[in-house]
Length: 199
Length: 199
Image 1 (cartoon, rainbow over the protein chains, first blue to last red):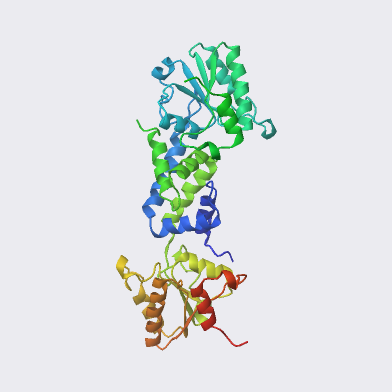
Image 2 (cartoon, each protein chain N blue to C red):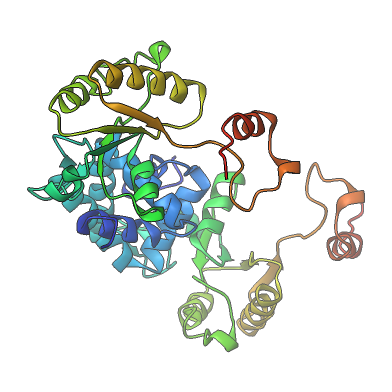
């Protein structure tokens, strides 16, 4: 006999599908919701349902979007002439929340990774291509992650932009603010040194 | 302007109310559900709704229960004459899953903690009292946690059972299986020594 009753078992299995949640955490969450915070369970169920029904993808920047007009694709943002390419929604949020950048975005929802079957088509690069060709933008800012695959993606994107005569830039890599040289890895330090700027 | 759109914001807030989930994890979960696993989101919403509607408390053992007859309160279990008191549903699951005990249970859903306003009434001890008085049980097994409050609760429960002439036992505390004496704390070791048994 399974120790859980069928519905409890289904709830725990559903919670386990959240990223970073194992069997013990899922059980704890289920008991917490049922025992102490039924309101939280109700509002979570409702928020999930509403999000699934109303949050889609913006057809132009590929970010999650729930309104008719995507908030990241406004005319004012387009007028900046800047287009920033990021790997995922969390990266967009980080730039939007941490910097004063208010240009347009393009969310790849991944990175080039031929071994995993992720090529230009999966990242919607044809859409990006047409946006670069539209003449709306004079700078493509590449903000993919500084990993092997992120760098390969950046290289590919840079070639695309150059073919359309759009200026390309890459966000700077170097010693993070508050970091200490002593504890920074060699690769980062090499980047920081080669990317030095006159003061 | 809030960086999140309203529904996304509500979804992230709802996920944050799960135990052990902070703002970053909640954002990660929301993006994961929306981007990669919409089926998981749908089944979670459904499981939550069904659980809220159908999972209640067993009127006799206070465990979560979704059927007419609680699976932990069957006549066969009552016939064992044993009643095991645990603090929460997870403790019941641990005993049910890890041992061959197949008697009845009583789930306190907490422990005596006067400072937090948790007294005998909150733990349903009047219900336990009437079950002890019914004559169905000849042994009360106390499996509260070996914490200060758990010990106080155990003491209180033992007094209750003795007043009804029901034998009382407490699960053993000592060196865990696979543990090494060298690394076991003094309190546990003292328990293990004073609780030694002839072999």
